[in-house]
Each structure stands twice: as C-alpha cells, then as structure tokens.
Length: 412
Ligand code: ASP
Ligand code: MG
Image 1 (cartoon, protein in one colour):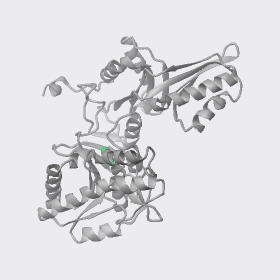
Image 2 (tube, helix red, strand yellow; image 1 turned 180 degrees about the vertical axis):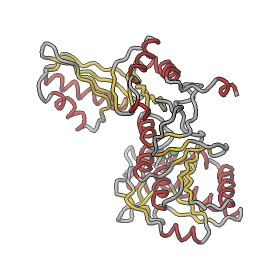
Image 3 (spheres, rainbow, N blue to C red; image 1 turned 60 degrees about the vertical axis):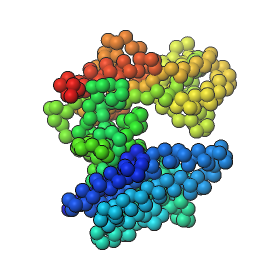
Image 4 (spheres, protein in one colour; image 1 turned 90 degrees about the vertical axis):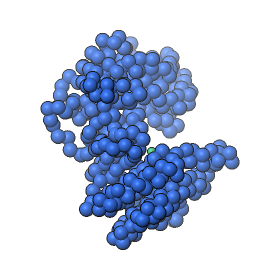
C-alpha cells in the first residue's frame, strides 16, 4: 500500500463535471488500496477573477487582504471535491492550509513554506479518509492567511509529499507529461519518460510552464519522486528523478527551452577600468531589475562594450537607468533591442560529452541564424538570437540533437 499525493490543477477542476471526473479517478486509486492526499487548485480562471476584483478597488491592493481573498478559490474546490468523493461512498475530508497548519513566512502573495504539521492528515488517513487539501495557501506565525505565488499549488503538493514521506507526488494537469520542447512549435516534440530535477529546474526557469519552479526546487531538495500526468488520459507521464543513469539510448540533450520575454541592452564605449560592471549593474539591481545574461567585450582603445538582458517588462526602466549611467560615465551610446529570444539546450549528458555547444552553433549556422550572445553552465547552453528566427532555431536544434519523434509515431 502506497501513500500518494495527487495534485489537480485549475483546468482539471475547472467545472463541476470535471470535479466529478477527478473524484472517479481518485476512487479508483483508493479501491486499489492506496492512501491518497489530494491537493487542488482553484477552478481555472478563478484566481484571475478574484485578482481583477481587487484591482477594481485599488491598483495595488494590500497584500494581506489580497491573500485573504484569493485563498477562497481553493477553498471552494476542496469542498466540492470532498462532496463528490463522499457522494461516491469514498470517505473524505477537506482542509484549508490553515487547518493543516501549512506554516509559511509572512511574505504575502509569495510566501515560503516553513513547516507542515502532518499529524492531522496522518490521523485522517488512518481513519480511512481521503484528505483534500487546499493548494497555494498557508498561514504565518501570527495566523495571517498567506499564498505561495502563482502556480503555488504545485509547491503545496510537493511540500505535503515531503512532510508525509509519500511514495510519489503526482501532478495532474492538461498535458500528458514534460516534452522535449513545446509541441506547438515542434510537431515532432516527444514526451520524456524521465528527466532529472536539475534538468527540469533549468527547463522551468527557461520558460517551460509545466511546473512551478519552486515546486521543482523543493522536490529536488527533499528527493520527492515527482510525476507529471494528464488528468483525463491514461499514460505513464514523466517522472522527475534524482538519478542520472547513463544508457546508450540516453540522448545528450533532454530538452530545448526558449523564451521571448527578454530584452537586450548595450552600453557602448565605457572606460575599461575596475568597478565598471558594478557601476552599470549596481543601479539596475537596486531598482529590483533582474539581469539574466551578461557579456563584456574585450577592450580596445581603453574602452569596452557591455551588454546584458532583462525581462521585457523591465526594459523601459532599465533603459532609463542605463541612459543616466551612460551620461555620468561619458559612455558613447546606449542601444536597446526587444526583438530577441533566448533558446537553450538542456541536458545532464553535457557533463560527459564534449562538443555539445559547437554542435548547437553548427545547427544554427546551417540555418543562417546569427548568435548575439552565448552563455553556458554545466548542463545548459543558451543563445540569444533575433526573435523572428526563434521557431526555426528550435526546430533545427530539435533535429540536430536527435530529439524528433520517429516518423511512425507522429503519423499515429
Ligand atoms: N490558483 C492559483 C493560481 O492560479 C494557484 C495554482 O493554481 O497553483 O495561480
Ligand atoms: Mg498550475
């Protein structure tokens, strides 16, 4: 008999019919003898609807009150699901984050889980009940309701699985697993049977939206076996694990991630003296703008060019700051570009294989795609290219690294 934590996302509980379907599914697991803890999101669209309501009162609603309100979304679904289970003869009980004491810090709207008191849940499981817990929410040390940030129910699921030492945390969603890349861009994208936490973390932070980044971090830290599955289709899904078994068939690259959310800024002709990078990036970070890739050219004539990327939402504020700095430093000019995209190849196989980056550059060269910036880490190579070539680049790389699904499979 296993203990399984199952998390169902917003679309999976988006209507009463779907909640009934989810209840059927849970009933089957239970009939098979497993202990089940279920975590649910709010019905799809509900969290957005609640936030919109608050915005009608104030552009920047008080964070504490916002949490009091948005946490109601999940409270509705836990009750509906528990009712649907009980109707089917499955003993069930629902709890809010406060009731099972998912203790968080006090950072409203982006709180972090500190501790979970699993006793209450354990008692209910012993009594033979399915325990339905509200995702996304917790309570701080002073009893204030908190929420964990958008997509936070994934984190609730993983944290509960860790606290209960569950055999697996299953994340049910509207896709049947983690793919080599976005199937909307590459028709030959394949579902991965397995991916490591490290790779998944890179994929998530590089733009793959299947799992909340924090949930992946948490699962890796506590070695919670995590599986992404489709809510209403049968299939093995994708297992996210610790082990990096080397096998012959194991591809060097597991996935290709991309995002269009960045913008590039260049400050030209800055003096090549100590402290320049800090002079440029200090004020940028003081303005809470996160910098992603950074390139500083080799100096000649005692001046150099400095380029970095930021989130596109931060582009205007970063540009303004940079212009001020440029004036102060007597730099030649500031250039900005929002028509860029970042494409990354990710894979733990890179550790044991040389020449992965050059294979990437070769594939892009063949398509005549110019690389503007490059950055590498142990298991990732990222490039910045012109946005209009993004889809071509992803497809070319998918083929070059032999990730394409076999022809027969795509014809199915
Ligand atoms: N309901 C919350 C959201 O929409 C949390 C979640 O779904 O994971 O972000
Ligand atoms: Mg989600």
